[in-house]
Structures are given as C-alpha cells and as structure tokens.
Length: 453
Image 1 (cartoon, rainbow, N blue to C red):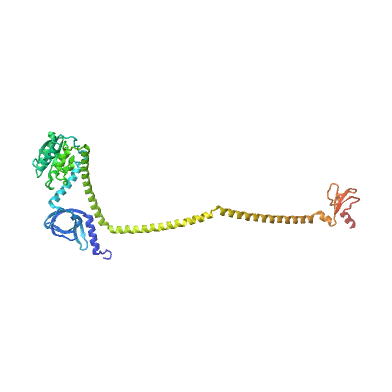
Image 2 (spheres, rainbow, N blue to C red):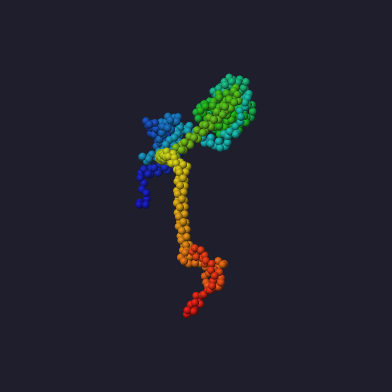
C-alpha cells in the first residue's frame, strides 16, 4: 500500500473518461429510444436499448437542432456518438452528434460506404467525364413513361426547342426491379446509338425511393456509357451516386431538359456547368470541414483549452508589460539624448579646443621663457666659474704675484738649467712686459748641493 498511489474518486473518473474517449472515439449504433427527456435548456437526455442492454445518452441543442425526426420513446434510430463518462456521477454515457431514423440512417451509411468504394475505383473522376454536345438534335430519356419527370422534360423541350427529337427508353425508377430496368435502358440506348445525349432520372422522393440510382450496377452502366449522360434524379437537395458518375448533374428533370435545349450562348452553358461542379465540390468541402471541426473539437476537449488560454493570456500580459517598459525606457532615452548630444557637442566644440590649445601654448611659452632664463643664468654662472678657475691656474695670475716666465727664442718655456747654454739669449716675461737677457752662467741645484755636502 505504501508504494502504490491511492487515487481520489475524481482522479479515477477522469482517467476512465480519458481512456473511453481516446480509445473508442466516435461510434455508430442503432437502438430503441427510452426515457426520452427534452430539457428546458434545449438538450435531450435519453437511453438507447436493445433486448439485452441499454446506455444513457445526451444530445446537446447545438446538435439536435439538425435532427430531421421527432424522437419519441420506442422509436428505432441510428446515432453517431462519442463515448464518454459523466464524471460527477461516474455514469457511462454517449454524447450523440447525429440522429436519424434507423431505416434511413442505415441507407445513408450504406450510401457513404458505397460512395467511397466507387470513388476509389475512379468512377467519379472528372477526367472520365464526356462533354455535352453544343447543338443537340436528338435526346434520349431513361425514366418512367408515366411519371411526372417525363412530362416535365417534354414540356420544357417543347417550349424551348420543339425541333429536338425525344426518344424515351422506359424503365422502372423505384423498387427492387428498378436497377435492372435502368441498366437495360442505358445499355439499349448505347447499342442503338440513336441520340447525342441521355437524360437519366426521375422526380423527387425519399432516400429509399431514390435508392435504385445509388446501386452499383446503375453507376457502372452510367460510367460505361459511350453517350454523354445527364443525371436528373429527385429535387435540387437530393444527391445520388448516379449524379457523381454522370457527365453532368441537373437539379431536376426540368433543369436537365433546359440544359440540352438551352438557347443561350456556350458561355452560359459553361457557367451552369461550373456552378454545378462548384456546388458539388463545396458540398464535399463542407462535409470534410465538418469532420475536421468535429475532430478538432474532440481534441480540444482532451487538452483543456481553458488552461492553454490562461497561459496565453498570462503570456500576453507579460509581453504587454515588457513592451510598456521597453517603450518607457526608449522614450526616456530619446528625451535625454538631445541633452547628451548637446553636451558632447559643447565638449567637441572647436572654440573650446582652440582656447585649450591657446592656454597650453601660453603655458609652454612661459615655461620656455623661464627655462631659457634659467639656462642662460646657469651658463653664465658656469662661465664665471670657469673664468675663476682659469684665473686660478692662469700663468698671468702667477706672474702678477711676482713670478716670471722665461722662454728661449723658440718660445719654449725654460723649466731647467739644462735647457739653456751660456750666452744664449732668453726672454723673461713679467707682469707688465718682457726682459731680454743673455745667459752668463748656469748652475744646477744638484751640483750646488753636492758642493755643499
């Protein structure tokens, strides 16, 4: 027990509902209505039963508005429904989407199955359809010779174009033997090859009355016909498989007669053809889109759209706030930018740069002048010092103190007695001039010291 997750009742019913709806999805079934209730909200609640079982059902007003019958207890019906579970009570139930009388519903279901089969065989392909001749002189009509359809056709042809010849190929158009009659009439017309186009049809009626024109043998005969065939079965709202296999469909037998006897231009014929094809394609398109919508609606019930919508709304609010903040910052920045640019412009102004350069030039001139004066003073002081040093070592200063300098005629300074000879003329330089003298004798200090010793 400690290792197992203990479910709440609501969790269990939710899981069971998900399994039922995801596994079984949509089903068709037939049964007898019982316990039928039409609620004040417009919804229908009932049970479907057979001899052994029954199941509770609900049909919401959005779907039951399209039902063409008035349901009552004891009535046999065919329904298309989604398998589901009513979670508050844990009741297994069906959500009915379509409801028809059981007999007509089965026929309609058979109609759809046969339609898919024949379409897969290519019997409804537009590439196989033959063009209706532009100028028709002889028309074949496959219908009941005593019905209202043949009278309508003859009346329209007589009124619009009496010159058109009509050949009637009589056939039953209702009942179990009708399909053989219709096939025989179409094959006979092709064998005789007497007409340029054939009208195959009858007046309106129920789906069961029109069923011979949905039989595969009749569709095959129309498909194999070498003569172009216009299908004119029932009223405008009635559609049979013969309409899809025929080379052209007319809403009524009278409309078919108008098509073959049209006194309008070829363009009008093409417009009518295109209109009929458009109506047929739109009908198919609407059916497909309806199925897509039902499928999407079923998926939406599984993925909780309210939760996703809340997430999207929260995301929208977040993006809105980010956008507002971003715009506020952008506006603030745009407001401050001119002041910032003005300050940068003032800082980059050439007048300020010139003033700064002028001040720097004046400072450098002042520094140069001061440096020049200091350098000159330093040089002067150094020069005075050198002069003083020269004066200290200058021989003139020595002479001024009472000394003299003796040179020979070669202007060589006499530093030793050994440099002169007796009788040699010498020049003696004193402070205020020079004296010329002649050496009378020279005595060396060493010789004198030796004598004293």
